[in-house]
Image (cartoon, rainbow, N blue to C red; front, top):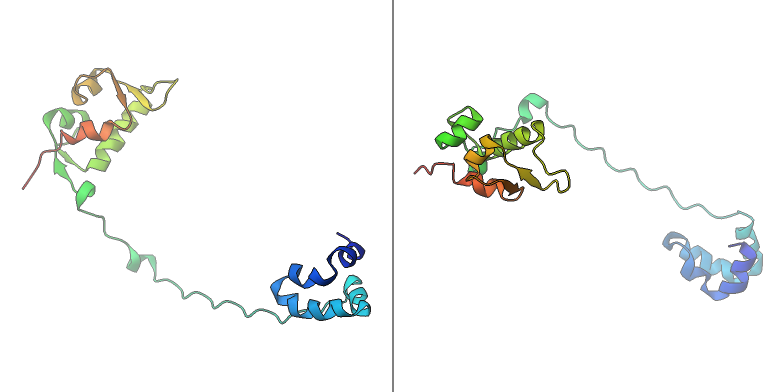
Length: 153
């Protein structure tokens, strides 16, 4: 909007539309037409520069900040059933690794339904671990795999 239109339409409201840092300066500018023409010509007062943010402290070297792998919950390696052990090739694994291996197998053998990527068509190898089902939804995978993890006390 041009400065002329601003003077015509906003007369006393100019201070309400100005940014907060300039609101006080603008309210005094509106009172005299001479000052308004100075503002319209580009003769605005600049506010003081903002202080720079403090630099962040440098982090420790990578050798000191390495996180130890989690060994509880779904990240805990537990023994698995013979059917899942045959599929994975190992007798014990974490739940997350088992799900990753299943998805790697599904994608490499192109077993996802092309019309609905959330469905998995089971081949003979997957039917052994998915209770003989022909189709499995992707949300069912973890539920069906949980029966293969042996509970240890």
